[in-house]
Image (cartoon, each protein chain N blue to C red):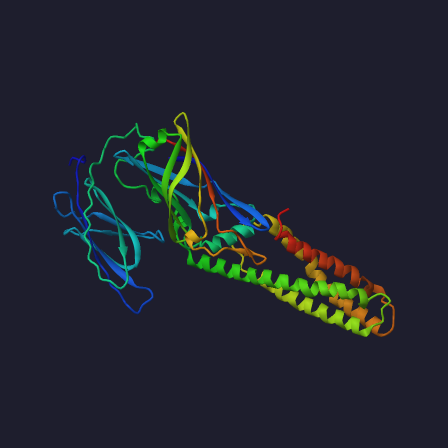
Length: 155
Length: 293
């Protein structure tokens, strides 16, 4: 089970560098036959950039009311949790679109029965067919990397 | 019944009901559920989930192991079937418009363990089912699509974009009005300079009014706490808003006094300072949402 998490998206604009943070993600892993299926989900509206206007605009532009959840699915071998680095193929559903990212690297640190996993998903706006929002006629950059920090525990 | 090592076969036949002239083509999915021996499974729960929207439709097989789910939008679906004490199976199917497809999938569940797999690090559940949103305990309000809310957000964004656009446009005549004020006031006696200043001021006022309209009429989103730079942006409106009303009134008085050959006096003398404070607050409001401090 996902015990706690911090997901942070980063948006670059010529006048701004913004980050939105969510700690509302939930996740679960189910293992069978040496493979584990993971699902991590987070409400779009839970991301907080410290600016309510920007957050509402983010929900609008990502169609967050129509598609309120971001989900990430992956399948890993059970043995992966013993490694210091895991490379995962991710399927991300967001804004009504599905994007797949191959071999995304995550660091794994084991502390007791907890696994601390961190990495960055190289998401872009075009992956999800999102029109780049603009401020003063200047659009944001296409790259919106999402930093993931999770703590998993056995149930 | 021994739950261990039970397999069943899960067959899916797709039948499309297509309307070639419709933008919203729909399809019907027929699902047949059998166990490993080929025996039909009645009362099996079937969940059909649209991969794009996450919306699920549930059905139950009849005594012949069949069920039909109609009025499905074309697209990718995850189909999950489960029978009490038998096992579960999952398939991914694509419903495509314009082609009538019949497809049969055979899915095999190898084993379903009753014993908790304590040695597994990620809390397995006693079946092969992939975890779902329901497993994560999100409430329906978290996961349910809200088209009305999206429409409200779309309208809000449109109106605030217009607000931003007109705000930027307003800065041009605003600056020109400030620049021409040098020759319009003081000891200047030029009627032309005063008139140019007056016209530019009037254009500024009109554009400001349109800018303000889009901000005031933009829909409010319930349950949203205002925070961040937008708080300062809104607070500054309490300065430049009244200022934009007061400035032309004082300006008209000053214009009248100058036109009568008088020195600007009384409350009309505040026209310049009020205009400067108003323009300053307007500029600060613009910067408050443009720059990161």
